[in-house]
Length: 464
Image (cartoon, rainbow, N blue to C red):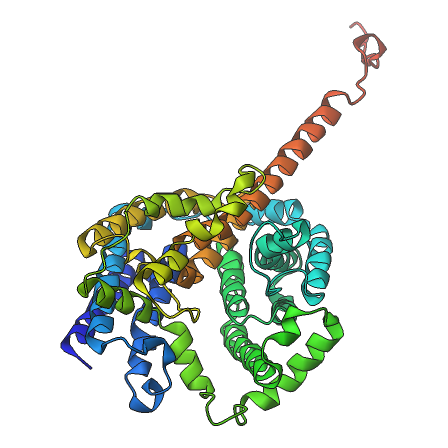
């Protein structure tokens, strides 16, 4: 380990210590805390594992990149996240303390009708199993069908909201069963990350609503999530990703998940295929992308215009509002633009949240940008956690899923929040309509007219 990498680890330790000290024992219930901890895994745990020679020799993401540039990128990205953390704490998030009232949870449970949400999950799951939904393997573009776009947008968030709504209505005694169903449904898509993200989001949503999840159930959650992830890895060893890119059906995918666990611990198909630990280390590390950019810049390649940074956020604009966006998605993709400009390997490198803009902004401007993001995230979180309402529960689930999906960068995180915002808006509108209908029914309820009132009985006392 180099001095630069050790400095990056020190910066990450400072971030975590500051969060824990300022936010107290409930610090893990906040989306920004999840964001910072996820960044520590990508910038600290992943690179530390890759420092092991037996693992590093299989890291194809770092081919052609000098280790010094990778460590420098790690330090710059860590400093950016430190700036985000400091700006977030400057908004005084600890002042927001949600009062847990049972009446609020009852209102949320009634507003989030779990039966309707489960019905909405059925077509999302069937389309995914048919290869026309989430993770269908098709590239985004004008040819993407409406069904595929809807499933990709709402699959993850609707499932976790449905699970939370059921548990808020029937209690946490059903937690493990609901988590198993949620994990299996997400596992049918063939992606490992959503299984872990939705499990964490579900726990945070329940805690925000005042429901306590026993420690043993939390431990079982961790074990179950790991088993599902290993099963998906085993399926990929057996059949690569082809099973998830075709109309294989629900039964075939569930059978593959059942058989995948035995394959995950065995040989990885060939001697050239790295083991699960190596794959895990490579997939959670997001420093190679930034290291390759720093190396290219040092060789004379100028950075791209900073104007592309705000322009990349236009990816979150819905297609029905901006129909021509589909023709410009490749140009609006900052990761792909940097791959083409700086000559990076086109092997699905993970840019990470701060690393996505390494090719647009100098280190000092990158730190300034993340300080601004930290302030924005802090004020948003203070508003979000101020009270427990149905719409804010949905937004909280979306915020946690977006925070834990930071490996894809800010534009994709905004797309995830867009999905949660649309669902939260729908929940809010339905609640307003129901409230007005209830008020109208009370307004027009029959009343007894004054002239039909019962005569009052009078008592006459005898004269003395």
